[in-house]
Length: 360
Ligand SMILES: *Cc1c(COP(=O)(O)O)cnc(C)c1O
Image 1: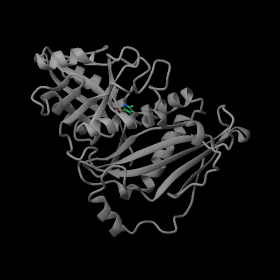
Image 2: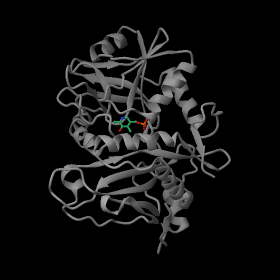
Image 3: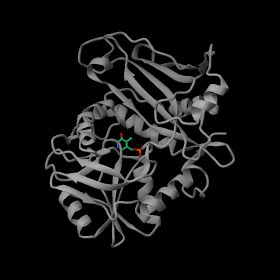
Image 4: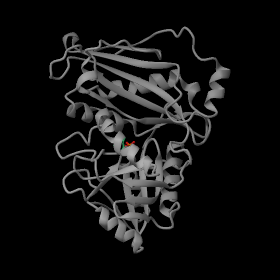
C-alpha cells in the first residue's frame, strides 16, 4: 500500500524542538507527524494510508469505540545507536501481538508488513525528534479503534489505525530507582477468559482506581493478584515481574491468558538463562513472596516493560504490612540485566539474537 505524504503547514521550528528535547518527560511531547490507515469492510478492508501532520481527528459521537471500547494499542521505541543511526527492538513481535490483540477484540488484523512500514515511515519523517540523551528514545504508539457510527453491539465495520510518536526520557522520575509496590486486594486486572492478554485500553481503565489507591498509600505502582484465588501474583498495571532467588533460580508468572505477554519479559527470560540462571514460568503467591523476602531466599524482584525497561522493586506494601526486597536497593542481577538489555537496544552490546532492526 502506498502512503500518501501530506505536507505539514507549520512543523515545530528546530530551536523550539531542540529545547523541548532537553527534558521530554514521558508521553507529554509529540512529534510533528502521524500515520493514519483506514479500514472499511465495504471498501475491501485496509484501503487508505497517509503520513501527514499530527493533528486532531474528527470522530462521529456514535463511533463505536466511544461506547463499547473496541480499541487496541502497542508500545515500542526507536533507539539512537552509537553511530547516530536508529534501531527498533524486536518490532515484528509488536506487529504480531497487535494482531493477537485485534483478534481478541473482534477487530481486523493489520498486515504485519503494513504495521512495520508505518513505523519506518514515521520514524524516517520525524527522525530529528529522537533524543540524543543516552536515557532517551522515541516512544512509538500504534493504535486502532472502531470508528463506525452505530450503537448496536457487534464488531464495527470501520476502523482507524493511527501511529504517533513521543520523544521520552526515563519513565519513572528517579530513573532506575527502586519502586514501592501496592498489593491490590480490592481490585483485579484480568479474569480468566477476559482480555488480560490483549493490549487494550479497557484493561488500563480498570487499573486506574487501584493505581490511585496505591498512590494514596505512598506507592508507585500496583501489583495485581489473580481474580479467582486472589493469591497468585500476576503483574503490575503495565509491567511483568521476575523474582530472583539466592539459589540461582528465577520465577516469572506463566502466560495463562490473564497476563500481557511482554516482549521485554520474553527477552529477559532468554538473557537471564544466558547468565546461567534457571528461569521457571510458574505461579508464585503473595504469601510466598513475603516469606521468601523476609527469610532471605529471595534476593531481587524486577519489573519490566518497554516504557520502564527494567525497574527494581524495593518495597512491597501488602495487606499484612510492608516488606523489603533484599536491601531495598537495586539488586545485582537487576542492574546487570538492565545494562545488558539497554546495551543491546542501543547497539553498545553485540546483538547475538538478531533482536535489533536498523532503520537507516
Ligand atoms: C505493554 C505491557 C507490558 C509490557 O510489555 P512489553 O512488550 O515488554 O513492553 C506488560 N504488562 C502490560 C499490562 C502491558 O500492557
